[in-house]
Image (cartoon, rainbow, N blue to C red; front, side, top):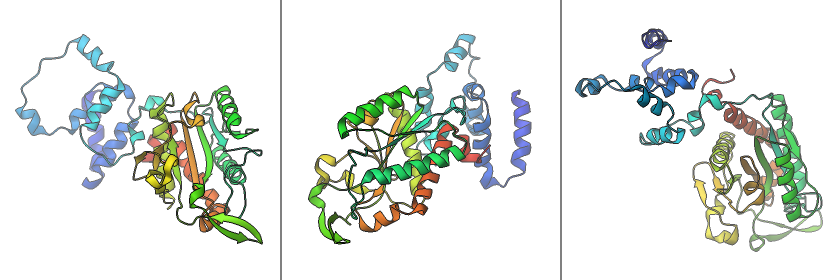
Length: 332
C-alpha cells in the first residue's frame, strides 16, 4: 500500500472514533502491519508534530545503501530507541515482531510437574505432599491449553530422588524439542519459620505469615530475554486473577532462599542456579502457584475454582506470548 493511500484509509478509520480512542486505534493498526512496513521507518513519522517538521532543515534523500543498513539494524537497537521515550502502558510483548508469532497447533509447551512421587517436595499444613498439588494443577493447565488449541502441550512427569530427577527432566524437555517450559510448584517457607499444630490427630506444621504466588526465571538460561517476557505475562495474569505475589523472597529473613526481585509490580524473581531453569535449551519459567504451608491458602489451592483460575491465567499468557496482537484485539 502506498503512503498516501494508507493515510486516506487510516483517516477514514480515525473519523469513526472519539479522540480519546485515537491512540488505541493507531497502536492496533501498527500491530497489524507487516513487519517490513514498520521497519521501513516512515510510520513513526506520522506521530511527529507538524511544527517539528516545519523547523527541521530538509535532509538529503538517503542512499540505497543507507536504506539497506537501516533495514538490517538489529531489533535491540530499535528497542533502545523505544526505551528512550520513557515508560509506556503496553506490555513488553506488544513490541515483539509480528513475524515471530507462533501456530498454536504446533507450538509445544512442556508442563513440568515439580518433584516426584519418591521426592514429594514440601508438606502442606494438612500433611499433603506438594507433588500431589503440582500434578493436579499441571493436569488442569494441560487440559485448558489443549482446549485453547495448543494441541502439542506435553505433561512432564519425572521419577527418582530430587537432584537426579532434575537432570532427567531437563533432558526429557530438551528431547521433546519444546518451545517453552513451565515448571509447576507450590510454596512453603524455611523450616525456621514453621510452627507446630495438630490436624486430624496428627502432628503437623504451618506458617500463616506469608502467602501468594511467585514467578522465577534464571538469568543463565540460554534465552533469558524470552524467559523473562513469558514470566512477566504469567505474573500479570496471576495478578489479573486477583492474586497477590509472595513478597518474602526479597527479604533478608529468607537467608539462602532470598532472591532478587526483578519486577516489584508483578512478583517476578530471578533464581539463577535452579537447574530446571538454567539447563533447559528453551525459555523456561517456574511458577509457585501459592503457599500450601499457609492454612487458609492451602484450602484455596485445593479447590477446583482456584486451579481453574490459575489454568485460565496461564492459557491467556501463552496465547499472548504466541501472538502479542491477541492482547490488544482479542482472538483473531
